[in-house]
Length: 324
Image 1: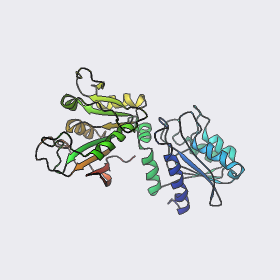
Image 2: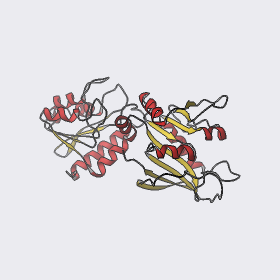
Image 3: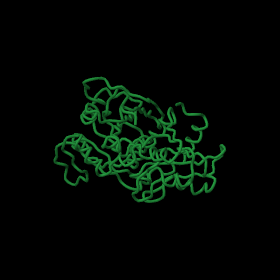
Image 4: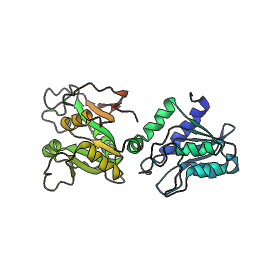
């Protein structure tokens, strides 16, 4: 069923509210909610931190008696289980909400349709959105959704390349400019983990820390491959099968992994279908020599949602290998 203009409007507002929890909700997803009566918002809320109230009860409490017979717009399927907080479904039913419109389903094993089922059993009309607003909701929580659904982190491969697809420029330390390098540190700060391959470790012995961006915490830092690590390295070595290592990271609540390795590691991840998103900073220079962005692939890889944006002197190209 197509999402109506009214529903899209209020779901967009809920997405805006959910964004206020970015960086503070881990390992929980970002969620926003709006209670609407007669096309007027009577309550709003968003989830801010684990262990604190979820978006739905915050919005319902703000709405008070006006919630009875109203519509609740929420960015993710309401939870039906009790952990650190009571089930949101209980609060929705107790408030007398007549209709719930959700932007996305929650694949987490303790939710996964149970929230919708309990709402319908309680006489609440349930609608799941489609189209662009649903895609926006999934991207907002792309790391959480992949972690919950596939049992591995959401993997982003980041690289800086010249216009002729090389990863180095003879005589230069950096390929990308200062603005792009700062953005990389912001990406590290927003990721649960950062990783490279042993080839990069031997060549550069990188720290992989998030520097000069006010990072609230540092990501876990890994090297994939066979050791040993250089003396003094603070990276953790992962020498097992890629799928097994990613599964172990997911069990430790690593939901997002920023892959900064060279072409060998990136190609290995792509060949195994383990890269979800590509971020390539393209510098305005022709190198003429050096390693290329990727090695040979056994088959072409289709990309979606291709976008470009200027970052200082460079252009950032982004695309999904697997949409969330």
